[in-house]
Image (cartoon, rainbow over all chains, first blue to last red):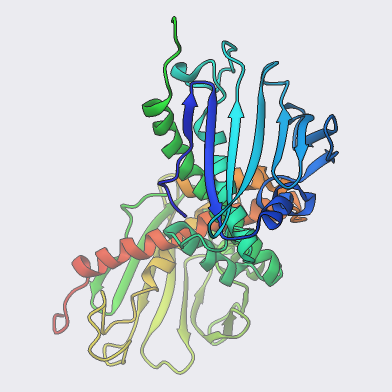
Length: 214
Length: 215
C-alpha cells in the first residue's frame, strides 16, 4: 500500500498507471479479463464479450461501450462513448524480469466539459480524486488477488478500523464471521478511498498539464 | 451530546451525574425501572419492583438486590456480594421536566484493578465504568425523546465513510437488508462515541478524581 506510485499524466488528456506484479503474464491477464476475478478487485462486468467489437459494461451505462482491441495475453482496449467520442482506456501487459508489467492507460477526448463534479482546473478532463483514487485502490487489491490473499486484507489497521473491529466483536452477533470480515474489509476500503481521493485531488492540482490555447 | 456534563466525584469512591430530561417524572421513572424500557437504552434485564427484590442485568451476569424502591423518586440497588456499595437514581420535578441524579458508591476498602497500575483512576473502579454511564445517559435521552439511541450523534469522518459504504453495498455481494445496514452504520458511530468517551474520561479521571488518602 504505497502512496508513491501515483498516476502520471502523459499529457492533459492521457493518464497512466504502471504496476509490476510478481506473477506470470497469463496470471495477470486472467485477473484483468475473468469476470469473477474482476469482481474481486474492480467491478463485476456484465455484459462482458471478450472479442474486438464485443460489448462491456461495468456498474453503470456511463461505464460501458465496446472492446476496441483484444490481444491475449497482452492488450485489451475499450472505448467509453459516454465520456467523449475519442475516450478509451486499456490494459497492456509485458513480461519483465521477475513478473509482469501492467500499464493502464486512459485517454479523454479534449475540450469536453465533464460536469459539475469536476474541479475548475480540470474542467475538460475526467481526472478527479475519486476516480483516480478508485483505480489506485483497485490496483492495490489486484496485487492482493494475485498474491492469493483477500482483496484489501493487507491494508494496515487505522483508528477507524479498530473501532469497526471492536463493533464487530461486541455487536455483530447476527452476522457470520465471514460477513463480518468482509464488512470490515469493505469499510477499510472506503476509508482508503477517502484518503486516496484527497491525495489525488492535490496530485491533479499539482501535475495536470494546463489546457493549451486557453 | 454535551461533553460538559461529565461526572463529579463527591469523594474518591463516589460518582455523581446530573441530567435534566424534558419529560414528566413518571415517564422517566418508567424508562429507568421498566424492563421493556431500560432494555432499549441500558441492557436487557429484570427488576423486581419492591425493596428487597432482586435485579439481574445482562443475562444474569450482573445481579443484586433492590435496597429502596420509592416510585417515582428513588431506586437504590446493590450488587450481589457487596455490603457497602450501591447505585441509585433520584428523580425530582424540575423546570422543563425531570432532574435525574445518579450516584454510585463503592467501598473504599475494595481492591480495584492491577496493583501498581498507573492507569487513570488506578486503585478505583472507575476506569471504563464512568464513561459507560455517560454513554447510557445519552442513550436514555434519545430513548425518552423517541429516537434510536445514538441516532443523534453528529456526523464524523468515520460515519461518513460508513454511510458511503452502506450506499455502495449493492456492489459488494453482501446480502444485507436496509435495516441491517442502518444498524451497522449506527453501531459503528456508537462504538466511536464510546471510544471518544473513554478517552475523555481518562483525562477527567486524571484531573477530577480526588487522590488516594483524601476524604
